[in-house]
Amino acid sequence: MTTVEQPSLGVRVLYSLRGEPDWSTLSREQLVVFRETQNRRLNSPLIRVATGFPDRGVSIGWEQVTLPDRALRVRVYRPTGPAAILPLVLHIHGGGFVGTAVQCDWINSHLAARLPAVVVSVEHRLIDQETPLSAAVDDGWDVLRSVVQDTARWGIDPARVAVFGESCGSMIAALSALRARESGLPLRAQVLVNPCVDVTQTAYDYVSMAEYADTPTLTVPQMEFFISLAAPRGVDARAVSPLYADDLSGLPPALVVVPVLDPVADHGPHLLRGAPQGRDGG
Image (cartoon, rainbow, N blue to C red; front, side):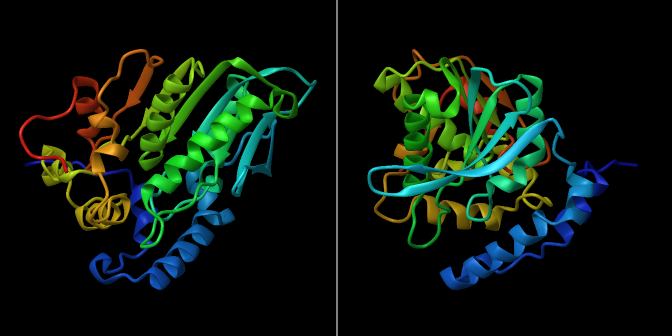
C-alpha cells in the first residue's frame, strides 16, 4: 500500500476552515473582504490553541515607524525584565496578499525570549491589483534602515542585526539583505523560512509545483494569482526575485529552511545552487 504524505491533522483542519475562493476571478474588493475574514480567524483565541500561545516573558505591542513619505505599523516583541541593549531581528511575515504580523506572535515572541533580542515585524503593504510586490519590498527595507538609524529609541545594537522572513516575507528579507549590502549596513544573518524567491515564469518549472500542486497551505492557482499581483505585466519580475540577483557575494550567512509538501519546496534549494537555466525568466 502506498502512503500519501500529508500535513499534520492540525494544519489540515486549520486550512479547511478557510475556504478557497476562485482566484482567477477575485476582484480587489473581494480580496480585501477575504483578507479581513482570514485575519480575524487567524488571530482568534480558538485558532491559537492550534498555532500556539506567545511567550509570557515577552511584551508585544504595536508601534509606528514614520518615514519621509508614509508611516508603517510594526509589531514589536521585547523580553521583559531589566532594560538592555539587545540584537535586532527584522521580521517579515508571510501570507502574500493575506497576512499580518499578528499571525506570527508565537514564533516571534519565542524568538525574542530565547535569543534574547528585539524582534520588529513589519506590517508592510499587502499586494493586490493596485499594490505590487515592490511596494512591500520598499516597506521592509525602509523599516530596517529606520530602526537601525534610531538605536536609542529601539534599544538595539546596530552591530547585531539579522533579517528573518517567512514564505513571501523571505523574498522581502532577502532583497532587504541585498539593499543592506549596497548601502553598507552590516547584517549578521538572514533567515529564510519556506522561501518563495522566484516570481518569474520559471516559478512554474519546479518539480515541487507539480508534485504538491494542491496542499492545505498553498495551491498552484493561489500561487498563480500571487505572481500575477507580485509582477504584473510590464514589471521586471527578476527585480523582485532574489533567485535572479546578479551578485550574491558579500551577503551575510543564510539559514534556509526548506518546506515539505508545498509548491515552493524547491525554491530554497535552487536559491542555494543559483538561478535555473534555460527558460526566459521575464
